[in-house]
Image (tube, rainbow over all chains, first blue to last red):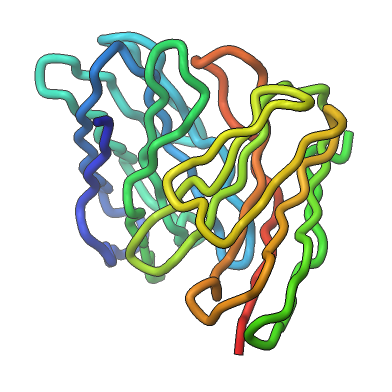
Length: 112
Length: 113
């Protein structure tokens, strides 16, 4: 079945550091890939997405590239801010389906 | 647009009590779903609906019922609450395309004593 694997957290960084959160997936079809972010006490918000191989999703300085050959969708940001502290979820939707399959989430803590 | 709304925001139940978590969306989305979020487990799908009158089970449906009488509303019923149902519950909705995002409500934090 479909699954998503994320790196364990928490990831602790200083402000302006480079961020990578790893995400790999297993899917039977050609999934769309998503990164969601959850700020403390809130629901999930879409951060970025990519719907086919080699697509790059980007938003708010975050980027992720859909790599079919390595079945990966790693999240990166060049310079994190304290306000980026949140939990980040990688997720996929397989072709023709609506169901989202989530990874377990990675907590990011950014200190000044 | 209000988006996806959920009520209540917090709830405490005793074991064996029943209750309904409300979810509504005003975006005319066909697809709606309920997830529970537990530490270290990510979000797990409880039930989903692809349109009014159509519901199906997700990954963890036991102990929960749903119905979808209108496009807008998708309530989740706990028939006899158990401590294992202590969790944060999220409702989400989306259009019919698998490339589109799901929009999430703010969540309901449920504690069962």
